[in-house]
Length: 362
Ligand SMILES: Cc1cc2nc3c(=O)[nH]c(=O)nc-3n(C[C@H](O)[C@H](O)[C@H](O)COP(=O)(O)OP(=O)(O)OC[C@H]3O[C@@H](n4cnc5c(N)ncnc54)[C@H](O)[C@@H]3O)c2cc1C
Image 1 (cartoon, protein in one colour):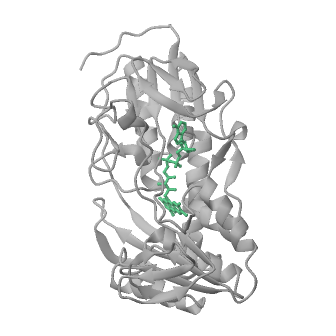
Image 2: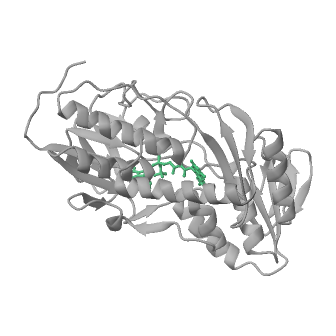
Image 3: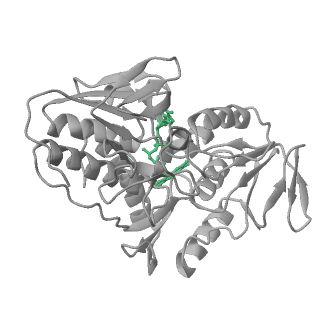
């Protein structure tokens, strides 16, 4: 790989997306690359803590913080949506452009809700869901679609905050992301909060009735789509090669295989074995920012290594279940419940935000 000669010239860096990965990358580059002139482009003037969107929906927590308070002095925040990236510049939807020496593509992941459902995995969806939930009278029925972490956390949060509602969670095999013991704890925790667990697949929700593959059907007042899938099509639209999920293909240093000037980090990066997780997005951003620092200092970059530690879910504000994993994300038998798990999960959520704001972590 060609080393870049030491230089005092300005290094123009454009960061696309101010979630966990983009915000962390911008702040870390600002600390480590003296020559950097950094612009962050994000559709909203807020940093959204996606890991708290279920709280935003249930009214038990706020997920948005002004972006200005998350970025180091000297970083320019630009409110806008990037329409195209490549050839050393980004083009925004308003037609304006920004040139870069390096770009960080950090646009995260998205949702593909079924008609008749409201998604909780994006800020816009969560705001609609929050308003719809708040308007429901006592005795109404809420169905949460998705038996993974987002569905479990959403169902539990809503059930705890609104005990006057009937809450169901629907998924082919609810909580099967956990091993036997943790799986049991999650399901009994949901049941203690009064959540009905329905191991089935939603086939239709377009007319106020939830229909399932088994043939069962329920009248439902609000159906929340709690599945995160796919990524924004910016990379594909810009001609960068992507995988089947639309994630940009990257080299060992987290750079697009089509353009070495574009680092791709977080949910939108096609790193083999990576799932959508703040716990993965943040270390990737830190590694890519460090790689940029090394390159600008004329040092050789080091390859990124994906490592997992645990997976955890909250069950309302007072309970959580954490399951330890091996570095390759296979499950270890050990799991935690009770106060320890609850404190650890909250610390992890705060840690993601802290790392983004300070550009810290590894
Ligand atoms: C309810 C919920 C709970 C979760 N809990 C956990 C958890 O406990 N642990 C965990 O590890 N993960 C969790 N996750 C997943 C985690 O939130 C994501 O993996 C994480 O947000 C990914 O970070 P990111 O920076 O890649 O993307 P994001 O945080 O999604 O940020 C992407 C940013 O890019 C912006 N953007 C998109 N398109 C454009 C564009 N064209 N131009 C400019 N900006 C753009 C977006 O608006 C956004 O601000 C949870 C997710 C949800 C929904």
